[in-house]
Length: 266
Image (cartoon, rainbow, N blue to C red; front, side, top):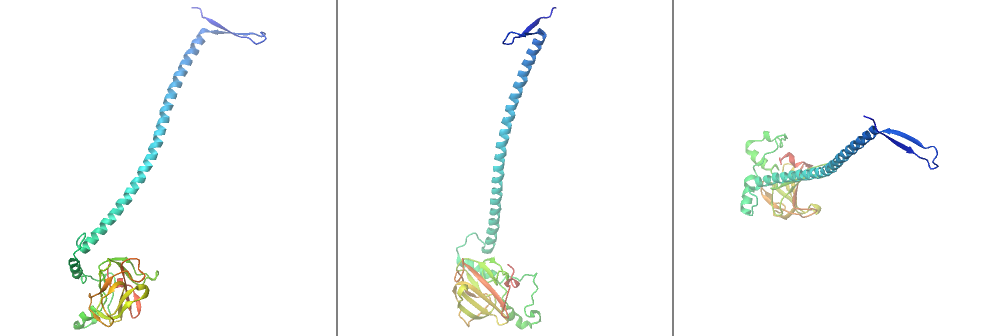
């Protein structure tokens, strides 16, 4: 079969130097096939490129959404942690008052009376209360009664003893009007207003120890009166320099302030 040829002429503007090229029809066929293949490949590439761009855009959106979900999850974890803390606090308060909300003052007072002498000193602290183990058995009870070793109020410790912060006592948060108890037997040395400490009662336990109770709402003992361990001397208040209802409690030994936690285990 005879091959076909095509003649291609290139004619300049001045019509001189005309160039002619003889091209076989086979090359035209090859060129057509190549052009069709290129168009098909380009189409497939553009289609896949569109899909890739769509996936990339979707990934960026998912990344932003995931970051938002992680942030919300962290917020939920923090909220659950706070709820757990409140649940623990609620259980502790429930254990103290044996109820969620109790308006019966007689029942509350019976709970306080039943538990105020049940406290035992911290076993980790070895304190010899003025050679207590060498006392005669007949005097032991009297001398023990003079040691300020029980909790002064049914409340929660809100601030510890700290010499560095010049807070030479312990604060107890409790509802205003809650009874305050003498932590040891003795004689009332002071009963009245004490400037920033507000209404204050100081008890001399007549063994070198003295205890003081400040920010009282009202005082129920007078100077010079003898008071028994556990006796009510006043109620929790906000007198003096107090931002909220609480009791500021201090103990001194031979005139030097000491940490009340030596005698009590909160």
